[in-house]
Length: 94
Image 1 (cartoon, helix red, strand yellow):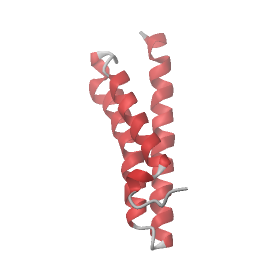
Image 2 (spheres, helix red, strand yellow; image 1 turned 120 degrees about the vertical axis):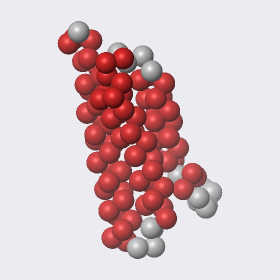
Image 3 (spheres, helix red, strand yellow; image 1 turned 30 degrees about the vertical axis):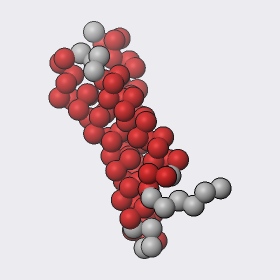
Image 4 (cartoon, one colour; image 1 turned 180 degrees about the vertical axis):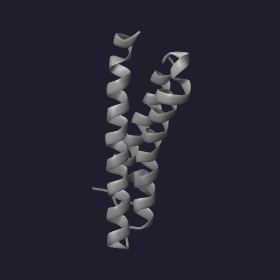
């Protein structure tokens, strides 16, 4: 097992970054009328998961701050899941 020196070394960071990139690519095909609602929201929340992991790493010496940022990251992940659910069912509404 290697030593983690930077937040980019964390598997959870890498996976969340990859997911945000995939969501960005997939959201390019969303209907234009969703550009400023669903598209923008899902891109922001998916990126926020990764950003909060980065912030948590920076605050890892302060347990309460570390936990708070990880909790924020989990909340953003759940928000992203909800937006993905809306995106999945979007064609049914057209």
